[in-house]
Length: 444
Ligand code: AMP
Ligand code: ZN
Image (cartoon, rainbow, N blue to C red; front, top):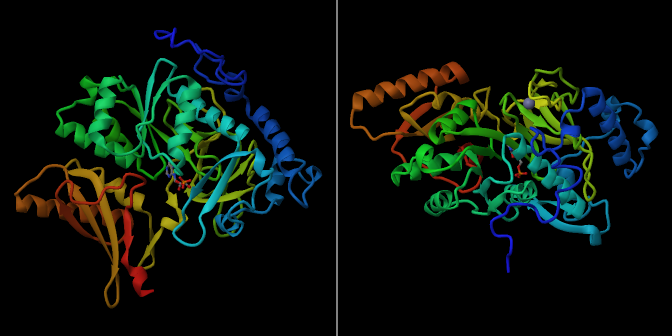
């Protein structure tokens, strides 16, 4: 029996630490608006507590925050080698969940969570969603994969923690998604960006205009690299703001970094992580503004704290203050992963550079595929991209192909083969989009 059908008053109050900010722009005003000095003092204290558990390091070795550099790096390989439970720092009876990400080679990696880890993770996600204006009377549809992929349960628990009605729609089945959006009055969606563009296509086919026929006001997009141009497209299609969300299973999942309403970099929560950017070859720190590899140290994780984890993601620090009042470091959108970098004829290219150019052509839809092949001498790149509208005008198509080739050459310094294909002809994935097929590997 439910005697409280019309009320959204929480039955038990939210955590005493977070969620005190109703009426405020902040979910946790005290933490979010700390000064840099306060943030750094908290980080030092938490770092000392974290290393206490690690062999060979005593808190005395960590006198300042810069001493984090004395610590060794941790890599995905370390996680693989200790598969499944070797990295655990607590007895198994204290672990309540695991997530696993499958690599392309070798053992998968396993990430363990205590009850408290899950609670802190939910806090991070709730903080993010609150930051972009979501409140308990919102309806949150999570159109991301559930299961081992952390985008499902991670957003589920975070949105519930904030107090929203949360719809675990999961990925795919766009017609059903659209029905839910309309019938439940969904105001916010989380999905991978490539899925949002797919959802919009189906809305268009069904004659549903997200601006007039839905109550949508916020999108959270993340889990895969996407360009600023792709984000702008998504915002124009859906008629709402789309905020970039960064997550990684090894850190917890989504929640690690999220854009504030300024949309000028993602705030990485420094009460939870120490953020470093290093040169991926020398492993020395790079100055703010310079691109390097993102290194993260967890500060609040119990089951599997990780010191100086090499994420392989390439990005840079944009700033450490923000007009929104949060002084947690602002990190630029990911340029890609060092493992995604394609080397063709000696030139280093990231898929996102290609996406950035393609998205500037209104004649093109959002789905594209890059294929790398080798003939006798040379590596070749073919870029297939879907046309937004069908056309028989051969001359116009040729001119468009030529112009795309020219613009791509300016960006990546070599001329790819460009193929314009009809909408719906390239593969779509329900999870993270596959943008590159490297057929050269066969010959290497
Ligand atoms: P997983 O933990 O397997 O879900 O994957 C984590 C990885 O997804 C990160 O290391 C990034 O490479 C990628 N990723 C997650 N969020 C974003 C984002 N907002 N932008 C770009 N890449 C992302
Ligand atoms: Zn901000």
